[in-house]
Structures are given as structure tokens and as C-alpha cells.
Length: 189
Image (cartoon, rainbow, N blue to C red; front, side):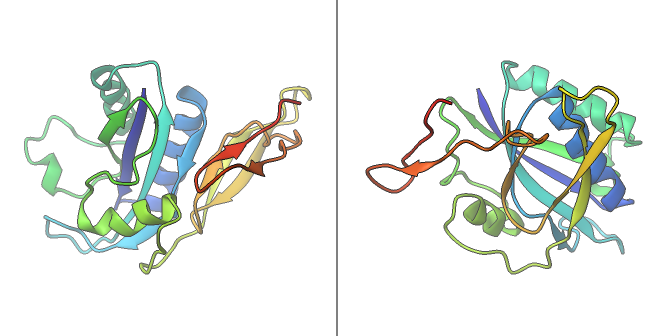
């Protein structure tokens, strides 16, 4: 199943969003990631701006179990989910599932207005006007070189696939346009 998810943070957001992306990459797999933007809080009173992004992940987990993993990650980052008002308080991390389907195309999904440009950008249908924020995400080193440590990847300034097989010093496969928009072929190598 494919899931369209959002990440938000307004307490040490550079740290929490970067770490959450690295942790999701390690535990869930490759992420199709939007730009990361700075926004004013919506539906709450706070002087702390948010960092927000969208991502698409594929997971064998159902939505309930995936959300449980997200909540565990939020709690590990310091969010107090036991507070009945946690939705209107500042938070180090908030990960939500916005939509799911079996084909992974969320171009027409309904999202909150402050995320609409991110969704359009993710599918090549527009650009983002909110301020974009560059983040460094830690990636595991190449698997064929034990002990090589961690690589970092800059994210946030445009859509990308994080954790693709081409990362970690493997060569990216050639991509050829096929018979129309959104149709590509990737030859086996």
C-alpha cells in the first residue's frame, strides 16, 4: 500500500524533521519527498514557525499499524501524545497519514491548503511559493563498504526520491520517456 504523509515540527524543527526523515528511510524504505517549507502555525496560537513537507511511502503495513509506528516516532522525539490538547500545542514532530491507495498517485488527493503547493510540486503541477528550507539528512553509507559511516544528503529545496537505489554510490538506471506524460521505462540492468 502507498501512503501520502505529512511531517510537521515547530520545536527545533531542523533537527526533528531531519532525524525523522532518516529514521523513516531506515525503517520504512525509500521516500518520495516534497520540498520542505516554513509556515506559520495553523489552528493554534504559537510564535514558533513550522517546517512542513509531504512524502509518499510504500509499506506492507496497514494504515493503523503504520500510524502506530509514526506515533512511536513522535513520542521518541518528545511529543506528549497523552495531553488531550496536543493537537494545539507546539510539537517537536507530527506525522500524519493523509491518503492511501494501491498505485501511489496522490496528485488529486485532498490536503490542507498550506500543503497544496507541496502536493502540486511533488507531481510536477506547480511550484512552491512558501520559503523552502534546506536540511541535511543522514543516510547509511554504501553497503558494499562496511565501516564507511554515514553519508548526508541535502533535501528540502525540491522534490526528490530519498533512499533510491542510486544513492550510496550505485549508478542510477537510465530513465526513458515512454508514450506520454507520467509514463517512463527503466530498463533492467
